[in-house]
Length: 244
Image: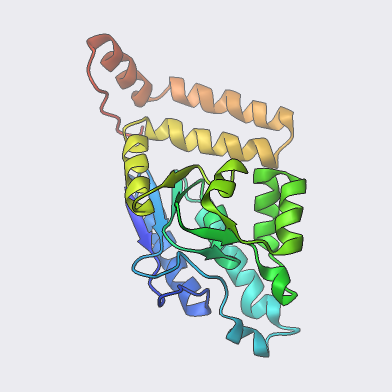
């Protein structure tokens, strides 16, 4: 398991330095072949991430794509492209760009008192990346409501709507670590392939996604992990997966 902790002040505001540091951490994690799960959390901040630093907007206009939009989109894509399962641990608010970070992860665990929202419309802004990911997660009607109103919702509503996977009445980070530990016991190759197939179900045609499924299942049957899983099953012991 690997962890990436945001460490940019009590609110972990999205700034260019913050995005550069996050992108560096993502690159380091992606270079570790034995990582079976990655947790993204808010470090010692009060917020997981309270969104963009509005002070950076003052000088942005025609060059916003060059100065902010494309770079931020690249970092979010790199986060989403981590091959291992990823979990966002939300021990504090995740607003605007902060929720976009969480939505780029595969799973989300939230503290019972934490809140979240895509609040850009309150400023006349737009949650671009987040709008797309949220709509795929909860459907257009609920995504539209959150986007149009800039609503800030609590943990239970986020769970009911399928934005988060679990609510913790203690530390969301500790709950995410427990979840990650369970994931780490399963076949890492299986989990990486499962992530690819879930993403393919959203990004590709049905026929293309099913074709990928056939190829990846053959790779699983060729793998040492499946041999180990079968041996462990018949020997009534815990498997020791190597990820190959």
